[in-house]
Image 1 (cartoon, rainbow, N blue to C red):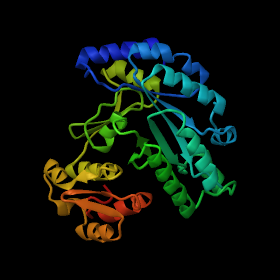
Image 2 (cartoon, rainbow, N blue to C red):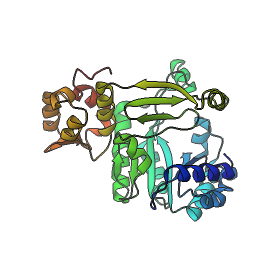
Image 3 (cartoon, rainbow, N blue to C red):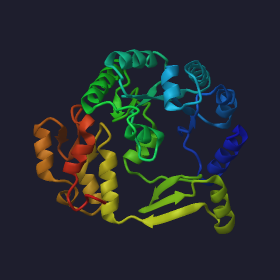
Image 4 (cartoon, rainbow, N blue to C red):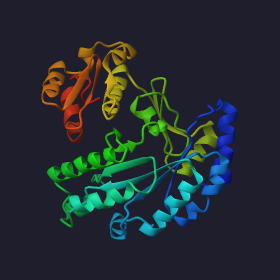
Length: 317
């Protein structure tokens, strides 16, 4: 996206809605020298936070992941971003096939010295329909087993906490006060507006999705005045289920009483009280008055815990 277009979009957004003096405006960027060359202009256009898709600090891993940038190029882009933006984040992927604890410790330790206030650290997942899924099916490689992945997850929590960037969400780490406000909106299940091609939105109980292809988005806008491809009303159970699934990813957990009031439901309709008590006793969940959350020991088992905890009436929604 040319910096001039970024500036035009932000100018129009501020005209329409006004900006808070402390607004967070994040640009997601590839860590290439081409994008880095635009960082000074983008900062002048109003961008004040950048998230870079670094993925790895090792060339061999980047090639295996199919990334077009190299490690040196990514480090240069990161250095350039830090020179122009007050807040910088980047992401890494770990738990790759045959990934050892020593390898991940070395890479994460290096990442934590690079000076950013936020890190997104994702375990490799094999998505259906991808090259990785095809390779696994053909026996080209085997995913890292759950026990070894859990060990790497534990290393991640230990090193980031010691460096002053503890987890605030299962895969996201930040210095206190540097959490990504945009993503917190998702996880706290607040309203957000998705505008551009492929963007999803949740506003007033409505779920929207824009056309993925820019040309279809532009055609829809020309013919209908918007690029929306789908618009669905979410019933109360849909919204409550989404709020639970998102909120329990956060270290801060969620307030059951506030959620029950928000969706005009009682707590028994939201969660299975017996499953909650059982997993609190096992040390996988915590409860403080009306607030519940997942413990450090429970985070690696989040999907299984959600399956147990979410009330039957909401399961499958």
